[in-house]
Length: 639
Image (cartoon, rainbow, N blue to C red; front, side, top):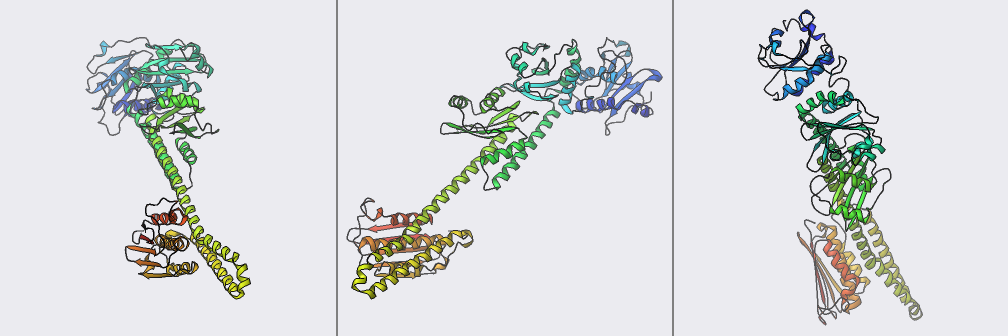
């Protein structure tokens, strides 16, 4: 038969069979797969060939008789044949899969009901042997009717053809069993499925009554599972079949064989399935990274906001972030109930006994889920770092496969870093607010407070002064009013400074000389004030600290030193502002304790704080009977 001239007749065959041929060719790296049923003029051929493959032979008989090299042939029944052309990438065991698929492909194309027999390219037709077949003419192909691509589609077809509802493929991962793929609906009992708990498998075992499953049977039954079966696939892998109805079909294992051969030929974790899963999980991690970035860009975000965004990015039903702090385990959750906030002590001890390195197995994840009150069927847990204190993320999905442990570990690391930034930012804001409150206390103490105190003392002395010299009393009253007005003006300036954006106005035109002279007059000191340099280039923090040093130095000289002479010297150069306040008063011992010298006064401590905050240094020199000298050096550039 001429293969090219018969192309229209070939393409008139069922499209589902051609699709099965294409899928088989793509999986096994074949560039052509076909099915020939019937003999003579009644022969019908369905085939698929790669568009960029080599030309097809001129005669189909050359292929079917084995005279054309490079073709694999499997004969079914008396004359039906499945044929395929190999490529350099075709795996060595491709013929095993072709033989397992042959009967299904021939039956779908309307051919015989016999089992396939392997024919090498050089085997003559007379050597072929046929056997009885269990395949019915109406049996669909291994992919047909599932509507599911990839390995999940093969598993769904396996469940369908064996009379079960779902088929789940598990592989050992060193610490337990990992779900590779599932075909069919996800059921509540899937959360407790563990192939290691199902006993010896052999070629396969079925529990028509789920209660008979060793160990976990009653729990499976309570969750709605009626029947369950386990098959061996690709060496150490396991396929678990389950159903919500009682399964009593006797030939289920025979009908599973073609599907097991397909899975065995491409491997329990075929490259396509791995690539599909990796691509899906990479997309999930990218969504989590985007969500984390949005949260960090919002200065008002909280840890709960972070968990909410991550839960949505993961498409999870619940998520928990556990952080060990000072012997306790704090929990931030994003669930319907928001419970719990703390883990009981006995569970904390168990959690701390877990290793923080490597993946968290399913049993541990389920244990954590029970403690946390999780209700999802699929739980995954991962530590964010391999050191203590412990920090872990637990996520749950009521439907779907969820996320693998390595992928969730990447998300856990994102969550841990973002939460640390959020908490650090909040701590920084709290420290800044405390610092500002202290600064305002300083300003009010030696600004408004001193002025009001002076005014009160003067008003108390006013009664005697009015009796002795009314005109002098009027002058004193005017001076008190002036001081109160100055203090009010200073308070308004402070309020204005609070509302102003300091970053937009880092330089100040504050008239320091005038303020210093006002302080000198307030305390009626015999002081000499000298200012050199351009104060307009001095940054506001340094200028404010200079004013505090001068104000507090003069106040201490007036209140404590009994000074006969006071000098104030201010010198501004491009790199530094120097402030010196010296008096000829009684002084104090340089090694005096805070309660024995002026250091116990509120103002001296405030001087130290303000100078340090501005990035400068403060030096206080004093000795009994030698007076006191205070020198502050404050930065001008780089502030």
